[in-house]
Length: 201
Image (cartoon, rainbow, N blue to C red):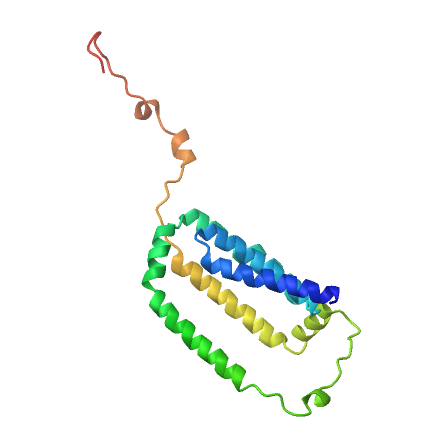
């Protein structure tokens, strides 16, 4: 067994175990931590197959932004584990039905998968590129697919603006008026009361 195969098995086992713990952990914070662990191990699997760009995107975008955002949301909302457990028990029949449908689809797809004769000989041999993987992807994105790439960016921008607009709430805020405070008179700010001795306020 080579070192690369050993690393692959190690990363794959940890990834599957982390994915199982994401959905089975009772504490939502622990679920997010296991999700981050699964992302890191998936990035390691991408590095093993030579897709370092996908590994970097997985770590920077998903671990650095999405998973950390999940963590902050879970910690700020203080999700009750009892409420989550009650919802899980209530929706268990629906989840079982969906899981059985997905399992049947996977069995059907796997059972009908047939490799045509001569496929290996027809596939061209992979030629190593003179540039790195990231440079090749960037060359394709900004030359052949530049319009599609810009359109995807515009769609994401519109979606972000729409989400902000839908969730924005205008609340009246009391602001400090410096000019009004400086120009007020003593009679408007101070009131003198004569209190007799022993009567109190």
